[in-house]
Image (cartoon, rainbow, N blue to C red; front, side, top):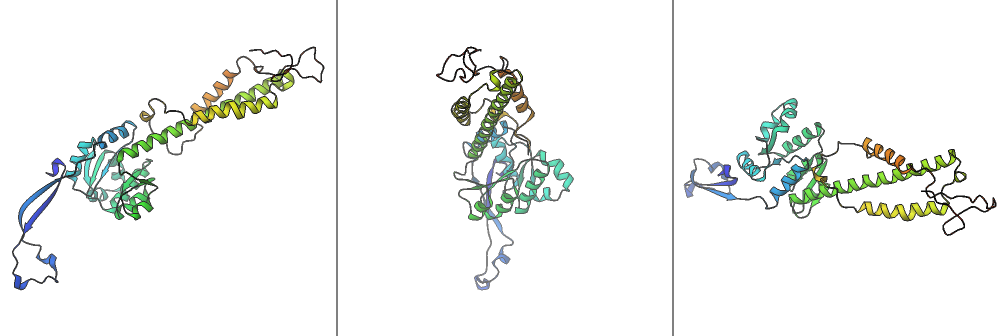
Length: 316
């Protein structure tokens, strides 16, 4: 029954002499020489959305492991139902390994059964030594140390106050699918932030190159934009684009990307290359786009066109 993912409860009896039985004495001393009368297999099936959520996490290159207090056989059977691959081991057996053996075997382990609180902490520490970002879920008092040791401790909303205080996130609906959704939204926010940074840097590079080119080539007296034009571009046009990028939909295939390395800077090489190439492309028509020109016949004190002003020439 354990191999089918059932939790097995055994019932047993023993005849006692009422005259020699002391209900206030050591009752555990009588738990011996029992006769098994029945085995009860209790089905505790995974939630309907759990398998799809595990598959979604795996598609996003997130390794899911099951850490349970149940027997290894039962845990392995449930893991197969959820699509969690890997070897099933006892928590005590994993703890008995040397540190090098733990680091070598952890990647092959998918289920850890009969775990004690210290085993969960050991698992989190071992994964962190490999450079992994570790998220640990739990709901009981004995889960609090592991939740605290993980990079992202997730406490169940129905869990104890101790677990909630130890966690950095509380799962209000107790659904694993919500964790995957939170990861997806986090990636979307980070991706949109990267888009916005590229946009701002591209704008700054374009402005610097435009003013530098106008100064070197003596175009528009080195002032290709008037102050009102600069304010209009920054506070109206660019602010609107930046606001839209912040609420942009997720990029296609976002959850199929590998997680970024721990400590990776937002200004990665691809971002800098994109900004540099884009800034040069923006200026391919010269630094005179939108420039303020002075009419050859106008007096020196009469600058040429401004928005809504006198004679002007736009070169595009």
